[in-house]
Each structure stands twice: as structure tokens, then as C-alpha cells.
Length: 86
Image (cartoon, rainbow, N blue to C red; front, side):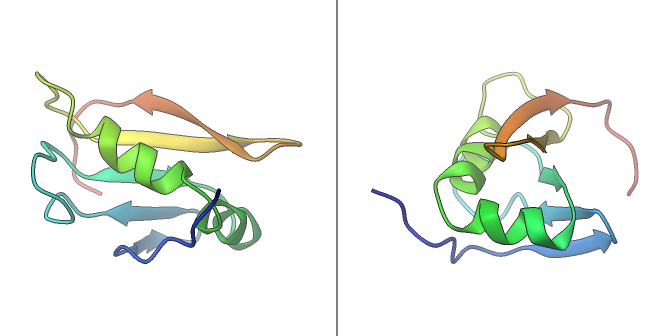
């Protein structure tokens, strides 16, 4: 069963959106999704963004949790990147 994402998304640039660390208790860093607007709409209709936010709750995390969609399923692949300003 899928649900539509209702959490916060802040546009960083044309291809990156941030889920701020204040979204849910326990997030240790921001979560960032890298996709175009079409991919973002697909990601909003499901659990992918919530799962990305959950990955930012991992113990010991000191950098943002990032993800990008893979075709054709548009499921998100999680990656980590060094802490740096957006």
C-alpha cells in the first residue's frame, strides 16, 4: 500500500531536494533526493522519501543521506556524501 508524501521538501537546485533534519525526531542529518521534477512526483507517490528520511536516522551518521532514482522502476538508491554546504 503506497501513500503520498506529505513531509517537507526544500528545493536546493533544479535536480536536488532536501528533507530537512527537523522533519522527524532522530534524523541526524538532512536527506537529499537527486532527480528531475517528473522523478520527484513518482517518488512522492510511495514510501521512497520516507525510507530516505529513515536512513538519515542511522546511528553514527554525520553526513547527508542522499538518493537518486534508477529507471525504469524509479526506486531510490541511497548514497552517502561528505558533509558540505549545499
